[in-house]
Image 1 (cartoon, rainbow, N blue to C red):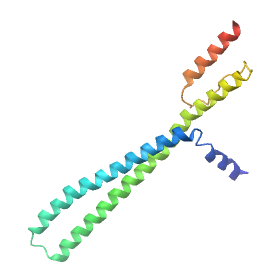
Image 2 (cartoon, one colour):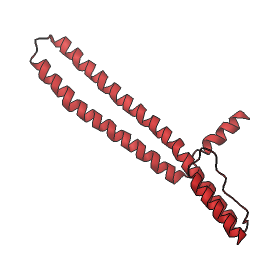
Image 3 (cartoon, rainbow, N blue to C red):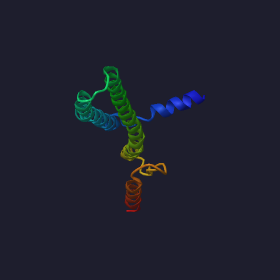
Length: 148
């Protein structure tokens, strides 16, 4: 029973897949661009600086190779951290868009219900959903129309 409840929740996260998908795609593309920019800047500045310093140093070759290996580990760690942050922001954006998409979806459902003949239908959003003011204004409009 608990598995069905969790499965239903995860399935309902994508209320408006087109809208939410575009937002998540935007976040992911931005993150990948940031990762590429980090990599480019890292390579251009740090590796070039190390090249200059190590080429004119009197360090043994094995120490120079160790410095370059350390740079590679640092660059990889920087890329992985950027990628992890990108996915964390994408997951946050998914749930943030869920609040907005849920509100729009519910408002559309109530409009369809009114169009079908149920003039008593009203928009009732969850407490933390976006567009509370739109729902309130819509309900007031419907109340005013029913009075007239």
